[in-house]
Image (cartoon, rainbow, N blue to C red):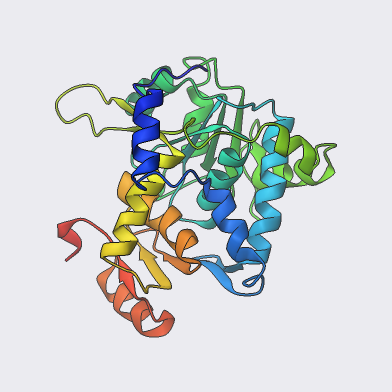
Length: 295
């Protein structure tokens, strides 16, 4: 899919020269820290702890798995997941191959998702079998006639080892496809994106009308995360995120910030203040980010 932006050569040069746009990919920042953090925690979620090394292997497998599904640079991968490791892995994998991530909040249903899907035209949807007693994967299967551009629905099981709906591709199955594929690192290097290519389409809330898809590049989202780290959390190593990763707050500060800092993140799928207090004590959380109602 072609994304037309308002970026000009002059604008790119200006923001690069003034130091606001770092001209880096998130995957490069990940790899820069990986060598010294292989055994250290990267993500702590309801499933457990995933190390930097485990994440690196999963990102590589997911990148190649997406390629086996026909995803190419500029294709959209829609994500409707709660705050779990699979969200982070998919973002890094998609960005590594030049795909465009379209995060969708897990509370959205048929009407909102169909509007967003028609605008973003995702080739692949990555979702979860069920969240908060609602079958998200089944919903996306039901939308396929209405959204024929969606070629594959990838489903994450609610618990490890659980089954996923028929007609979906299981998360573990897709990783296995990637590991067994003929794609190698040289293939990934050939499709390496530019920091000024669109990497994310984030939809507005639609409060005053239909949701609008805001296009971001690696430079625009990294600049936002970098300035927050510099001004708010310059020494933070343990991050917390309860805002959905499918909102820009969660995406910037629950996906990109801790990787840039070389730290780890603690995810909550559902906000619970008592649990946060326990996590601060048990995990040594340094910083979080969220809307005022959390306070």
